[in-house]
Length: 137
Image (cartoon, rainbow, N blue to C red; front, top):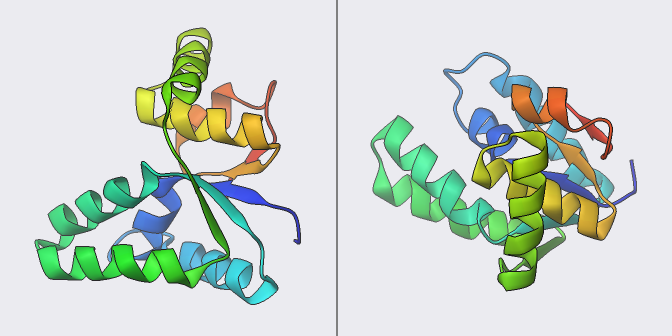
């Protein structure tokens, strides 16, 4: 894979939560992306989403903040600000496809930048294939 991708926070959280089913598969997928130099186009929302989830799951603020810094340097990463235009687009995607707000932000980024969306989120996997190239890791 050499194309640009958008990876939902669900994949990162799963990868860095070894107690979860499929964690090793998600980690292997992320490692392969890094090895192949695949650029990630991510909403800025991805950083607090991953940090918050890891802090809560592991009850470890320090580990969560360290991971956030690691993620910034781990990939060929472009962060997309959630400005008014993207927020409007994400709102439209959310309303049309009955997605949660944060899930719609990832979909909007993938649609706007022509990336494949990689996710473990069942709703994204079920509701977005008609408008977006979406798959599990």
